[in-house]
Image (cartoon, rainbow over all chains, first blue to last red; front, side, top):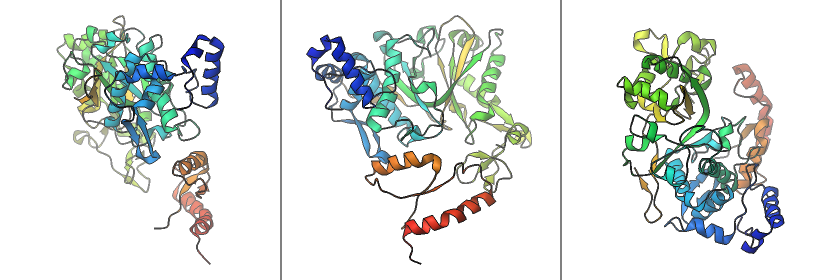
Length: 373
Length: 63
């Protein structure tokens, strides 16, 4: 990639721009969509956004013997269509992904087919024009679209995680093109996620999660928090998601749904606790799909009559007839995003059992080091 | 310790790609038909018996 910086002067020639774009495509330096040609002077604008050195490593995949430097991260951010002032968000995202851990350990090569989701909080949202309201998971906003795109494009270009090669995803997910949302802090009745986990409201932060699915949950008919909570719990506790013993989720509430809980006096931890208690499967449901036990070796779910099977943990009071699908209330994170116009929310299925705090990383202002919350 | 890698034929391309990443493009591994995860015990044992000559050959065992 180091050799492809065209002269700035050529940018005045549309034909030369198209030629450069085709060159990138022919070399496979793309997620399939056109990428922006990067010149040395344009790259310098990105590098000026951080106090880190271009050679500093921001993300490593030891099993691939490959590292991501600040310079490579900046080239790919520019190629993905980011503005230079988005770059501090990108660097914080890579730090969050490193702390989150699954990508470092090779999950992006798995047949499961996961994608990174970035949740952005704080003043940076308005500073760079991020969408936190209507169509928050959809298209139409450059900052959301290109910041999310940057992560996967970088995975392809810097780590070689191309489909049919090192990326073995059976189907993948549309979120692999881009998945970056901002929390709608202005329409939320609660503290935003980064404040919940120890940062100041005046800080900006990125929280990265590895996800498999984003499931729509619609309920316009009710103002009863228990009904909404049960709808969310039922959405989470689908057997198809139960690869491992337990699962985890990010519940992204619309402002309308969030206010129903808040008006009834529920905090975000209250909602997580409610969902933890009600996100269950019956033994009969699990047995019907052959997921009523755990593998002794892999901890994956399998039938109880499998030679490697051991019993899972059932609720004691249920006589082994009911099984929780979450390992703790902390396995459910809650954020607020979307327009305040309908009872439409989403359950983002995060990969792995989780239960610990999320990887909330403060976005550096370009003059100080990135700081973990 | 000597070892032989085994993968199903669905993973031949990524297996070769990983060998390239580690600088051993000619790294030899054994393959078996996909799928593996849904085989029962007798089918697993049958696959193992079928694989055995390839494993012994790659290990360089002298007869």
